[in-house]
Length: 494
Image (cartoon, rainbow, N blue to C red):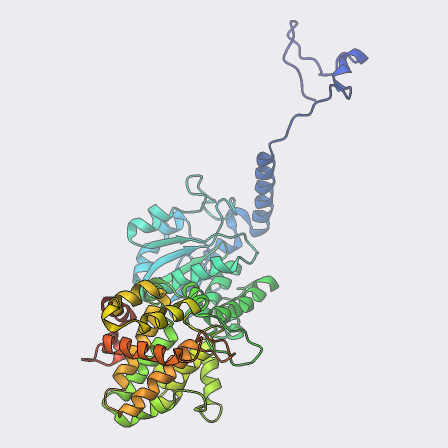
């Protein structure tokens, strides 16, 4: 029983020494009061108790997930000596969490350098598994090591993407994480991923990285990760998340309608989804340009360069009624939607050219808005001497997505049409004008009769203005030129 402070006699007395009813008048309904609990302290206490119980099952200081020595005795082969770790593919290691003492005891930095590990991805929450392993956690960092002192001062990049143990995270967190991993692997070197044990969260993250970067099917990814890292991907929720993440990537990369039931997108929504999917330089360069259409155009330019017969075939393949035979078209559409398309592997100019026309026609609305189309018609009805300069009109009237996307397409077909007869050049621009102004579902921005001719003349003038300037005509193959260079050239011309 708690006691009051000592009285005059020096003895402490119980709180309820005098039990007369007057002493309890404070408890009447009129005067009853309660001391408000600090919920944060309660939550903190419960969290500490949960962690201690969790750590007890793990083994505490001799945590089974952080005891490399026990596995060494069993001749368990690890990727990094001192860490229970496994290679998953050529570029990623799944690992238990390291600790400051392990960095020193096993010279982890030297091992990282030998194996070209230049980045560490930490998926833990601060303070978790506080009693596990040789170090527990440090109050200064909330982790078993210091990212700054143990890694970054040795030029090892350090990333934190925390989420709770034994759970599945939000898709946007994982997408950002795998984009960071992908960027790091492509630019800097290999990465080590860890949570606490390096099984559940780590397995999920690596699986999603393989889905994103290597475009492997989700079932194959789960099998591979579990094979290379026994015990990885621990819960049914984590398995479901990986399958759902694959579907999420497909939704973001959806480019062509293959089935009638599939929804169509307008160009701005398409580009918004594309920006979520891409990262780094690609995200910047393709901000207002559909990447797939650019890649198709680059391959078309390679196949038609100095080859008039291929140029003629590509132009004749534009427009309705030119549907490629067989299942090749839908196969390519599906591969584009699933992010497995390689434009350089397709040598059929008829198929590639049809895909360009088909993409614009399959949008939910024409790439030009009614206001933009009306402004173009009004501009073309002015006497040539009274019009503002065409580059100024384009830049001030059309959306950036229209300026860069249509500028790129017109530039490519200007080059393709250089060495073919005039009637085919006319056909190419008329088919493109149709695809820019009317979609397959019947929505059109062409108003009264006669506007098509004015829109056509506008795009002819635009193509002449560009002179193929979006693409470098000299030197190496067109696919060797970066889209950033193409976008910069487009911006300069317009």
